[in-house]
Amino acid sequence: MSHGCLTALHSSISILVVAGELELNHECNLMHWSPEDFESKLQEAMKQTYQRALKAATDFGYQKESPEALVHGAVISAFLTIAQAMTDQGCV
Image 1: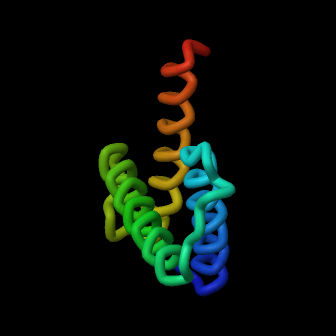
Image 2: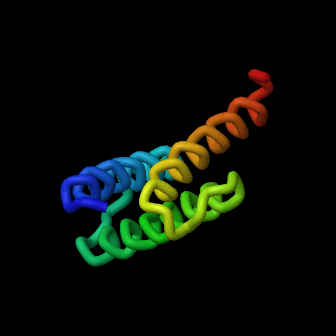
């Protein structure tokens, strides 16, 4: 994966981690993260995202050594996450 793609992925995950934490924490005005806490949460989210993408890719027949496996896996994983959320909310 190119440096530009990794930078974009890192930025996107950073936003999602912060948004997810704020959404889950109803008292977000009381939340204070140190730079170390933020970095730790971000690294964990990136590891989980990588693992989910790789698992989705292999579950749907992509070889994990394939250069496009992570891209396809990320799209599949995102779709499945949204589909599950819609199902949980009774939309489908």
